[in-house]
Length: 290
Image 1 (tube, rainbow, N blue to C red):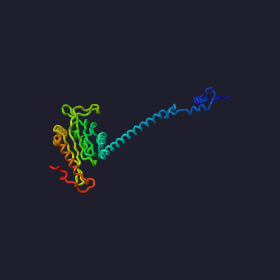
Image 2 (spheres, rainbow, N blue to C red; image 1 turned 90 degrees about the horizontal axis):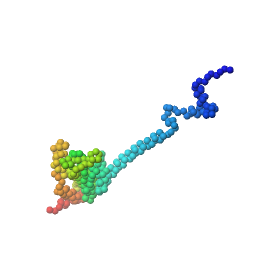
Image 3 (tube, one colour; image 1 turned 120 degrees about the vertical axis):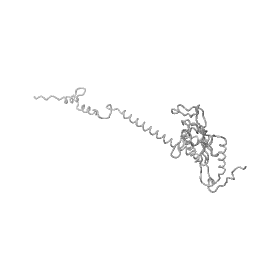
Image 4 (cartoon, rainbow, N blue to C red; image 1 turned 135 degrees about the vertical axis):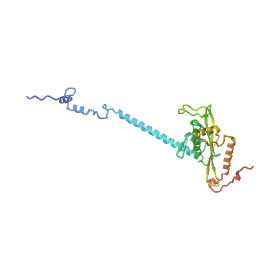
């Protein structure tokens, strides 16, 4: 009887792989074991766990959620800016002016924010005057204070004077000075606030004039209250010899004269500003009798 050739190592391994726990050959055992073989190049978890997929989905949801929140905040901020501007040009009262100063105003292609410390002194469509006072603690020197305040006053005046019932915008600017008279400002993102004595620096007065004989509307800017010391420092900082002083300081005569001019302009207004045509009143009709 011929002997069978000995089994190769591979055949021995395959044979024993077919044995079950009782030692009986089960041909399906090797096939089931082969079905559970894990491909080492596969990205699947050998244990069959799906935790990594869950983590990936959660991370993606968090990223998308953050992007949606940021986009929503930008949209809300832009809408709020436009509402502030629209409310100020349509309706002027202490609430709308305070909202505009707090949230900033949009004019043209720009956007202007105001100092966080402010007071609405007057905002009445019946008198036609808007007056606010701000305390600037962001500007580091007189030149920065002057340029920033000029832009802020122009932004507020541009929006307020678009209201047909507003004829004058007064923007009072104050700052905090140290013992040497230098302007102090907030440091380290406001963690160290400006210190010193609060002092009025200058006032921007924007006035709107309507001509009864034409459709022209004139806007005039006056800067008052700037003393020699402040003007000298600004001139030194810009290396200019031009004078920046309109009047040597704020006094009651200046304010009275400005109010008289505004009252005279109001008295000259008639129905022609709404209906057009020739002026109903002349300058002689409204001038006070001597």
